[in-house]
Amino acid sequence: MSNPFLLNLQRRDVITAPERAIIDDMTQRSRRVEAKRDIVEEGTMPTDSCLLLEGMAARYSVLDDGRRQITAVHVAGDFVDLHNLLLARMDHSVLALGDCTVAMVSHDFLRSLTTTHPHLTRLLWFCTVLDAAIHRQWLIASGRLSSVGQVAHFLCEMFTRLSVVELTEGFSFRLPLNQSELSDAMGLSVVHVNRTLQELRKRGLIRWHGDQVEILDWPGLVALAHFDPTYLNLESRPR
Amino acid sequence: MSNPFLLNLQRRDVITAPERAIIDDMTQRSRRVEAKRDIVEEGTMPTDSCLLLEGMAARYSVLDDGRRQITAVHVAGDFVDLHNLLLARMDHSVLALGDCTVAMVSHDFLRSLTTTHPHLTRLLWFCTVLDAAIHRQWLIASGRLSSVGQVAHFLCEMFTRLSVVELTEGFSFRLPLNQSELSDAMGLSVVHVNRTLQELRKRGLIRWHGDQVEILDWPGLVALAHFDPTYLNLESRPR
DNA sequence: CGGCTCTTTGACCTTGCTCAATTCGCGTGG
DNA sequence: CCACGCGAATTGAGCAAGGTCAAAGAGCCG
Image (cartoon, rainbow over the protein chains, first blue to last red):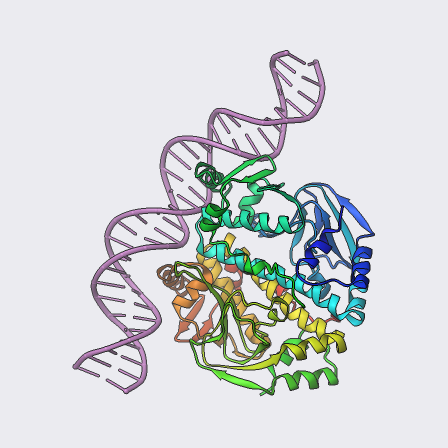
């Protein structure tokens, strides 16, 4: 199995052999996290950042009254809390959606890269900036799309991101996310998400059984979602 | 008038004299932008990033049907499109909310900093990562707060960020944002934003005439907004 | 005094929420 | 093989938040 983080980077820029060696090194020290367990907890000050090698994870915050909002969903090849190299204290938690394998990369090591490997540093920086671009699209979807459009947008994005790391088969992919978790990501109620999914199915746009999602009508879903993948920066160029 | 970008950084870490010289240098080449004009336009590939020295600006996207969403509001001392050093193509526009002064910093220069000044690079990286943290709070507010809570949260955040760059007087500050722009930032309709502001005034929490905002009951506003400034990373520590 | 933009209001409609109850899928133990 | 339990998905009914449309005020500048 090839390194999904490398796939992510190679899609965006040319990676030299020495850089590639460093990237491969980063995935050495890994640990398993069971589904539904926290990978990182709010309020802590981690000394490592987590690179997701297998599985999916979600960043989330909980309000004092128990309402939860998922602010990001990560797939294999994503650096789940790289931003924390700069921020010190976690302002949210990270949850394993399915079983996960995560590589732990020490902040000391990452900081040393910033003094020795400027191009690799910029690529890491790029990863965090891409996260922010995704946040902005979620803001647009949350603020200006209907629930159907918002869920459609989420599925378009997930499909596109998963295809970069070769985790799609045709228009099918695994999405280990139940309706409660989806509702927390969309900022909707579980009941409404359920009805929204029914609507998407009724329109013949998707099929979703268990953790297996199939997109039946990609152009239809894209149109409904106003999905434009520009923000995912899928072209390779010098960064 | 001291450099607001420097104020921003000094609040987060110790800045050495040589770094300070570079930061001061960055503000040399500046231009004025009139209120309601675009500072940067979607789809372009800028060769410079804009550091906001005076005024306020908003990043926004427009859907094909004309609906607009503001995804970020920037104040003096913010690097409005620093992320574009890595992303190449603008996936949104930037609007001057009031009259602005912006310093143009070339990407070539910023890229050269990544090879010569690792600590300064990390501070610039920090700025983009802070933007992302703010995006996440907006997602939480948009998804899980009522309109009153969401607007309250926005005001708490603006007050806190403006106080870092010394643009507050007591609990008052300038906010050159009309109700239409506020509604686009909150993902609400203008009518509803109008009623929401009335509600905040009625509860004795704020006063807002023209572009002058006064917070009358800070603890009340904070409670309503579930505002916790942790995500703004206001402590100075080695980054 | 006009004209322009922004704010405010009223009436009515739509979307999405809450609460509470079923139903379904599936693994486990008898 | 079947009953049971459990979490997740689904349904229904009633309600509340927020949207839309259209019109009326306010403030401001020339």
